Image (tube, rainbow, N blue to C red; front, side, top):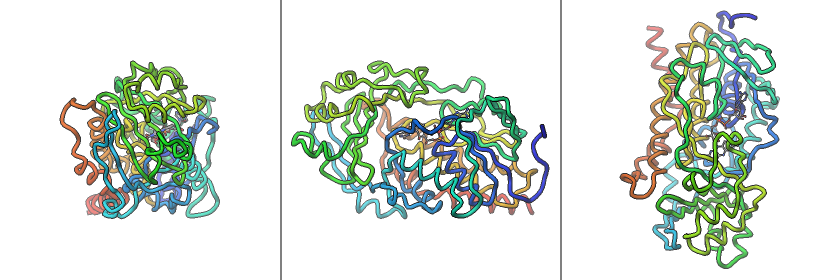
Length: 418
Ligand SMILES: Cc1cc2nc3c(=O)[nH]c(=O)nc-3n(C[C@H](O)[C@H](O)[C@H](O)COP(=O)(O)OP(=O)(O)OC[C@H]3O[C@@H](n4cnc5c(N)ncnc54)[C@H](O)[C@@H]3O)c2cc1C
């Protein structure tokens, strides 16, 4: 087996481990830069979950740069935000349609399966810029190394110029990074019941209609240590529910099933919110038990670095996200974009470790800060000062990672060529 590849200004051979939102984003951007990309995915994609994800303006800017207008796959804009007390009293309601005009791109709410499928199609199609990505499903990676060797569970070894660990919160590739020993994911103390419901079903009932009457409305029913977040997706035809509560009350366990697919029990969910207003209980009771999931919200301390030689981490493998700001997918997309910017066609193999360090420099502080905002946003009421909503919106949304990384690359190129 060759020990990685030798130099030359040619398309790089890039292997990405994991075809989630992060791995697919990186694959699309790197293919568009002209590289040869192979994606290794352990699953067969038959279990993709119905749920929604935010495409905040910072993420949507990059999705549009890929060439995708997510409105075409049913993503709908966020137009209003309403917060309720558990007894049903409205705490505040803001019209976001006007406010959001200050961002160059709309804040969209996308169906995760639709987004994932479209990313997969764009990565692998013959159409568009660059060569189609070679996607190998049902292919589990066992080990990776900083010199470009990927070892599969089957024993097969693949040699690459760059290896990208995009294998999510339970990453294996993370443990090939120096200093990662002992940096483990841990439960944040909270879990979330998740399900989708037909918006029409909620509209058809006079008691629950208020939760469905407005297109693009994000609603949060805020208790002290539990909350219910509801927002529409799929062209406003579905309502997405994320019902966050103390893990001890639903006994979601991360060791139970790779966590995303753990079955939730409706009676348990109704019990968790039993003190909330009857209209909300009625709405929650419309959930289909067959598709109700419970998801433990995981966290992790910072890794000291995300790179080793020609190995680099992106997305949840580098920085797992709690969902309180809807930025997990967005930050993974930003990572993918930044990585492609620092690896333009013509990058030599010798420069790769330095270029990956540049990617880390572009991304580390921002991803870490948004992780921290997310932790603060998830705190129980009365547990420390609340997040300044304007500060985080400016920081999160008012950023274009493609432009920021391009500027960093320009400076780096000037310095290294001087
Ligand atoms: C099913 C699912 C549902 C989610 N729902 C939400 C949500 O509703 N809201 C939200 O904010 N965030 C959600 N997330 C998290 C959010 O999507 C992530 O924060 C974000 O997309 C980061 O993506 P990622 O690509 O880094 O990781 P992931 O999306 O976790 O993707 C990692 C990929 O790597 C693959 N993989 C793992 N190990 C190996 C291996 N050894 N070999 C090969 N492949 C491997 C996995 O099968 C997976 O496809 C969800 C994630 C998943 C997987």
